[in-house]
Amino acid sequence: MSASATAIGDVEQVQPVGAERRQWSLDEIMALFELPFNDLLFEAQTIHRRHFDPNRIQMSRLLSIKTGSCPEDCNYCPQSAHFDTGLEKERLMKVEQVLEAARAAKEGGATRFCMGAAWRGPRGEDFETALAMIEGVKGLGLQTCASFGLLSSEQARQLKAAGLDYYNHNVDTSEEHYSEIITTRSYQDRLDTLAHVRDAGMHICSGGIVGLGEQQQDRAKMLQTLANLPKPPESVPINLLIPIPGTPLAEAERPDPFDFIRTIAVARILMPTSYVRLSAGREDMSDEMQALCFLAGANSIFCGEKLLTAKNAAPGRDRSLFDRLGLKPEGAA
Ligand code: SAM
Ligand code: DTB
Ligand code: SF4
Image (cartoon, rainbow, N blue to C red):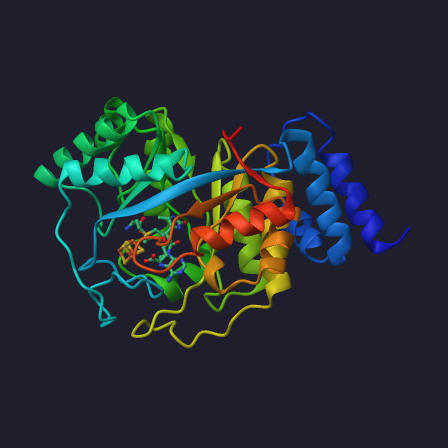
């Protein structure tokens, strides 16, 4: 039997149709990364079709409700106060401004509205305001998501009570590579926040970034951490690093596009019922690369002209890509 057939056979053996997978070993995950590209994509698409309509894409819209001056030192981030990225800092937005943006997002086809804040974690009056934003957005009939940094268990409960559906907090990379990228908070801090989110009864949105100078094994370990959580995240954003001038990763080597697509495919196989989001970095991807990401099992994107601070693929370009590929936004007729 060929190596690829063996690896695929193993996957089928350990993850029969309909069965719930519990724990993945690093060797199993590395074997997936090492499959011939066509075999890996076939496997990922096959699993994808068991759980999702392959021609529907969920659309989320991001808004930065508080931009810049972040005390954390994430080496990739334009919003860290540790680096001079020329970003214009902004105070916390007003609730009504956020609701206006959420209404526009809904009209633009988004079903989920994600509010990001450049905080180590939410505090004081600002947190009260953020809770009011969540209540308001939920009242518009949108799914709500927030990305506010580290949370205590009490804060997680307050977010849930305000109507928060998803909390985004990425593990970003493997535990080993993490300390090369962020020093101001630990991997365990991140896992603790995810546990608080889960205990409070919210859905988890957690993924990472490809292009931080990591090895394939770091990507495998990152996905292993996510897939082996007590319950895998319902939403898994896979970001391609947007190199930001002024950050330590401004000149990072761009990963091989096929390795990025492989990461999407492995995420799909490990977390068959999760939404895998093709997240940051689409602006610089070709239409063909995005199409391969969808074939690999990505079924969610950020829509709209902006992410938090960086440019996103233009809405007109997305519409045209969807038309050419016969894709439809989830929830659309
Ligand atoms: N401050 C909050 C936090 O860190 O959880 C929320 C916002 S933070 C910008 C959310 C995520 O955006 C990060 O965890 C990272 O995965 C992603 N991100 C930030 N800058 C990026 C970049 N330049 N390229 C790709 N992804 C990026
Ligand atoms: C995620 O994984 N990607 C989004 C969201 N979660 C909050 C953020 C991407 C940020 C890209 C850089 C920027 O716009 O500042
Ligand atoms: Fe701050 Fe989040 Fe950026 Fe890190 S990723 S610097 S925590 S805004």
